[in-house]
Length: 533
Image (cartoon, rainbow, N blue to C red; front, side, top):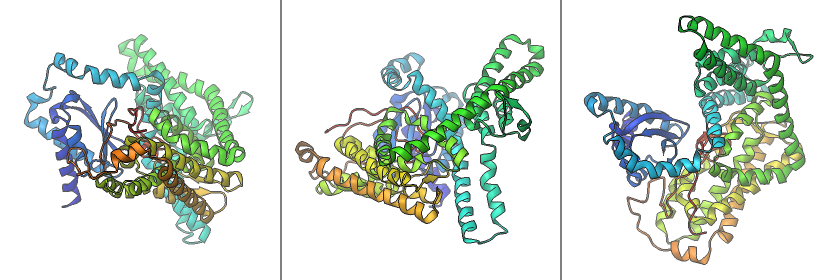
């Protein structure tokens, strides 16, 4: 089957299982997930969706999220949108929800209230907005990061000297203007005019600011970076909204944009650039200090606690920190350490495979999900294996802690390991690695951290991940039922609804958002208590 036909077939299989086109109110996607706004959640067949070969899992949040994996989701989403549009054109009268507003309230109120109570706290909603600003930038960060790594390799080897300047321009162009994109996305997310947010943020990277003095210091282009751009765009949104309320309609088209750029620009130049510059410098200094002095201890804590942070929806706060470090230093030293959480999951899953020799259902899930886990997409292993079992999720975090401790130790010894972009994890992070002692040393340390995470996660899970009751319950022959075992999502001993996200928020265990990158980056969802602890 051609790739386009395969993606359309996947979209066609999903559509009726979410209640059809009439039940879909919005369609979007992140690094790994198809995100659907639905009129009536009760029309969704969760188990049938999980059983689809292309579906790795499903997540309930503000939107209904179907985990398809990186690459696949970007191809399936346009096909899904086309199918929805075609269905609505064929039956325009069915565009609205198939049930009345009263029916929707009666059927969905309990689910909606429970989910919002867990995930819609003001702090988490704020983090979700921050993630929505940075997650769309991840593809460009990845592409430019890989080109930067390739260029560095060619420069070190002395190859293709006529080509490397062009590669350097490709790799650096986006980062030179990233503040503009952050400003644009910020204004869009906070309800302003996106281009005005971008215009105000562009002041930060304009070379002419080098002629301006603020707080007794001469400003430098880019001072304040993405944090300054974020603050400037938020201010622009509030100024614009104030103008929309008070400026007469006849003058609005002239006065509102002018006052928005003028007021926000002056505050940015004579306040935000300096303040945000100090904060950005402090973030870089603190990250270096933490790993230089804390070393293995700091790495142990970061690697071990990352997945619990994901479960609480707090990992989104790391995305602007990663981006700031990349902007300042050329790479983020935190991501390789946080990526060890995925290594612990892989090691734990392998231990489960050997500890449950009779449970062919779980073993089949592990065999199918392990390649994705090695590449940093941890959702199938977490949803289908470690989290439902309970203890293996905890021992997997232990594996991630030891892997993070390994990388942190070498940082303390002077060997820095960083990533030039956010998003990928596991083996997929190798092309993005950078450091201070050559590529060979950087790759060796990161590979050693992964191996440490695999081994520690395996040993911790094999010896401490199972109680006798857990072995008695799960180490039995089980014929996989189509309704509960997905081809890549696995069995579901306990109902789950949590996301996994990357150090940056993409939708996987290593990336931002995000997977989870990372992917987030995938914000805000929480998991029900795992069974069998």
